[in-house]
Image 1: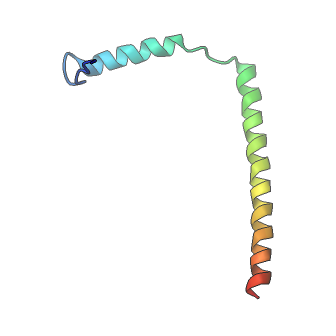
Image 2 (image 1 turned 120 degrees about the vertical axis):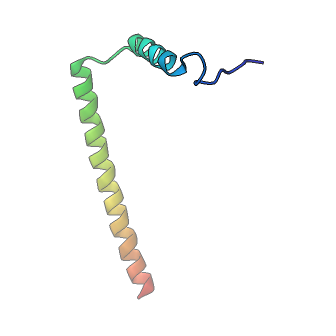
Length: 69
């Protein structure tokens, strides 16, 4: 069974920052072009989903209005 040390023991906060910094150095960051391209994709998909959900809401509101009279 693994023993988990309390972060308050043995400079836990300093160790946490040191380990976090070490993990961030291992990250493969996207290039500027990749980040821009992926941001565009996210924005376009968000707009498309917003339009689809808006139309669905409009259709269901109209249907409810007809049924509720």
